[in-house]
Image 1 (cartoon, rainbow, N blue to C red):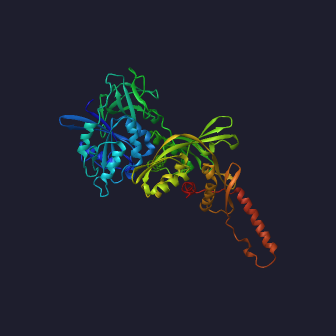
Image 2: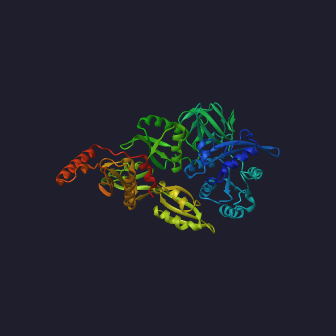
Image 3: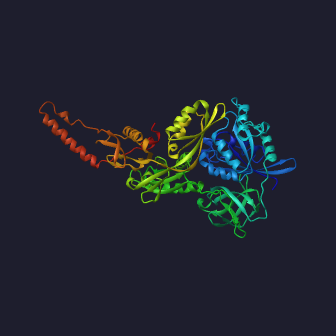
Length: 595
């Protein structure tokens, strides 16, 4: 065990952790020249194109230092805030972490939040200054920031470059010297922490784990403590570039297990594996059910494709257990699903994967978060969809989820960033200067306000410099109302939203104006209204396309013209009763981009 080193890499998005991982794999000769490609551990096309890691990966490297051969287990983690629970479980499986900071950008918000996660688990932190080859690198300034943040010595910071391979031998040496070997009792009952799972179409769900105590052998009967299910370990082994089977995976090592599991929901990240013969009585601390934060409706553009969409969603769930969905129907859009996502990026990725991997064109409704409504009878109702909100006469109060947002930006943008957050009903909790021109702002704000377009606006006003990170801090009472959109007195359920009373009038007026631009004119007049309960708060009218029926009357008595116009009016009235208004897809998306 003393020759095993388990470590992960923590960094902000785009600070070069996947590239640095490639260099480590090449240097330790885990992959041959022929197998090598950029971002080797990112195996989805989508990850490569966007340059982000969506799913965490693990790989084992063997390397001789002196006469001793070491086993390095690298667990690559996603950098984005949506996947922070997965990151926390990957961190729990490690004893050390490489903290990568971009020498040209300095410390960003997610670097700090993932660093705190690592410090909570008592990991040994190795600071690395990446992208030293860039002309815009500011090594001395960024070193000061790192020293302020983690209080290390200046000479402990390793300068490196993932592109040129500078500093890779020093990193390997630092991992050997500074990261402690795993501690565990090989004789104790088996306890293994699941930190990830992947789906294989031929072999079912494969779970990745780290053995904390005991050992796992091929053919063992194993049990997952939190779900209570039992399986037979058909195959166990360690993770190289491909899986390599072993007869036994020992204490401290990272491996995989194949046991013919069909449902992704049966393998929960953070669960504990033990054996049936000698079970461990307690599970490893820190397990949580992953809770979706953002909800949206996904509907097929063509209603006949509902079953195909269901099939596609089930297949996606095999790969990504954190997505939750249930069928729902809408008067405007037909049949579809109400889906729960971890955050906005997660929602975008799922939508894109549906289009790429399954050729499904889908309509996504306005995303919203889940609220808790209290009725006058004292019942609690969880509201994931605005149309589930109880009637205003039966409603006592509504609570909405709040988050703590950490925003790091340059000093010159503090004013605009603050006004954006206050406009989104944020309350400032803290402001601290990390260096003379970098400020960390901490806000408490409602989650529902950042779901729309907060991130894009933040990037715009800070010229791309601000970085943003958040975590949930619980529910608080708010004065929320349901805003319904009516077309010719018919409510369009896909456009209704829950919104704070103070913003409702502005929002309602803007939506009415936008819909008036986007809905094509009909042969009859269309009235577009925004209402709260029975009270209409905004109205726009889309005038009818009219034929000039009086063109054939020239001269003569006015009463002839009147008679013709009256006749046309009757026809329009009748048409309006039978005519229905088609809403284009752009109208649903327009609600997101009102400003």
